[in-house]
Length: 369
Length: 117
Image (cartoon, rainbow over all chains, first blue to last red; front, side, top):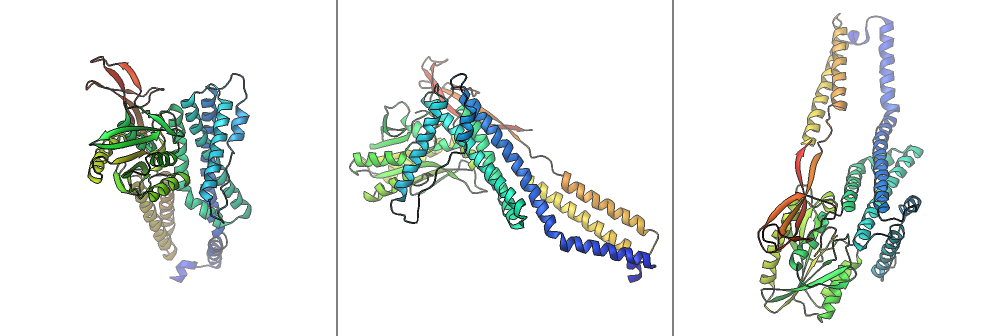
C-alpha cells in the first residue's frame, strides 16, 4: 500500500512529498486568503451592480426632473449634490420629547426636498412635484446603499479583514433585494402608477368616492359617510400625487373636534409579509397600523389612549418589492375583500349612532378619491 | 424552483468531486499501468464538477409584467380593460360612458404577470 503511495524510487517519493507539502501549505497558509478572495469577489460584483443601479436611477431622476425644468438650466450638478442629502436623527440619550424633535427634523427634511423640487422643476404641478420627490427619494436611497456597500468593500480590502467581508457577504442578498425594490419603485413613481403601499388609501378611496371632501391635515383629506346608521369619517392622503401626509395629525384633530366621542378607529395599511405567506392576505389585529418613523404613530396612540378609543388594525400582506412597485392584481382585489370585512366589523363592533374613524394609511400615488 | 435547481446542481457537483477523489485515491494506491488512465478519469470528473458548479446555473427567469387600466361606469356595468397610459390614476373621470353615456372612470390599475421569458 505504502509502496504504491510513495512509488518505487526515491524521485517519485520526493515528488509525492513535495506535492503533499504544497497541498498542505495551500490549505494551512493560504486558506484565509482564498476565503477573502472569494468573499471579495462577491462583494465587488455586488458593488458593481449597485453602482449601475445608482447611476441608472440618477439618470432616471434627471430625466424626470428635466420634463419640468426651465430650459437651459443646469440641474445635473444640483441633483448630484442632492443625492447625498442627509438628516441627522435627534439625540436619544435623553429620550424626553424625542418624537417631537424627530418630527421637527423630518419636517425640515421634507421641506428641504420640496423646496429643492420646486427650484429644479418649477413647471411641475402639485401632483407631478410629489411624484418627482418620490423619484428623487428612490435615487437617494440607491446612492446611499451603493456608497455604504462600497465603503465596507474598500475597508475590507484596506484592512484585509475576513470578518468585514464575511459580514458584508452575509447581508448582500437582503441588501440587493432592497436595492432592486427601490430601483423598480423609481420606475413606478416616475409613471405615477399606484403602488402596493397604496392599499390603505385605495380602500379609503373606495369608501369616499363621490362624497364631499375636506382637507383636515397636511396632505390629508376626510369624508363623512353613513354605514348602517354609524357616522364614519374616512381619511386618506390626498391623491393622486405621491403623498403620505400626516395621518396621525389628522386623526388627532378629528378626535379633538369630536371631543373624543369616537367609538372605534380602524386603521388599514400594507404590511410586510413573512416568507411563505401569500401576497394580498388580509389579517386583523389591534394597534396603530402605520409604518412611519414614530411621530404619527405616537399621536394616534396618544389620542386613542387619552379617550380610551379601541384601535383596530387591518393589514394586507406583501413584500417590500410589492409594496414599492405597481400594485399587483392580488393586492387590488384584496381591497374589495377588506372593504367587506371592514363594513362587517363596523356593524359588529359598534352600535347604531356611534362615530367611527377609518384611516387608509400609505402612499397614495396613482389613487385619487 | 430556482433554489431547488441550485441545490440539485450542488449535489451533482459534490458527487462528481467525491468520484474524482476516489479515482485519485485508487490511482495513487494501485501500482499498475492503468493508474495514469484512472488519474485522467478523476481529472475529467473534477473538471466536469467545476463546470457544472460554475456554469450550470441558468439566469433566473424574469417575469414579464403588464400594467392594466380597468375602466368602468358609474351608471351601468360597462367594463373595459386596456394598457396603462401615462396620466392614468384610479378614480380619474374619463367622460361619457360608451354604453349608457353615464360617467366613465378608472376603476383600477394593477399589474399582472403574463408569462416568463
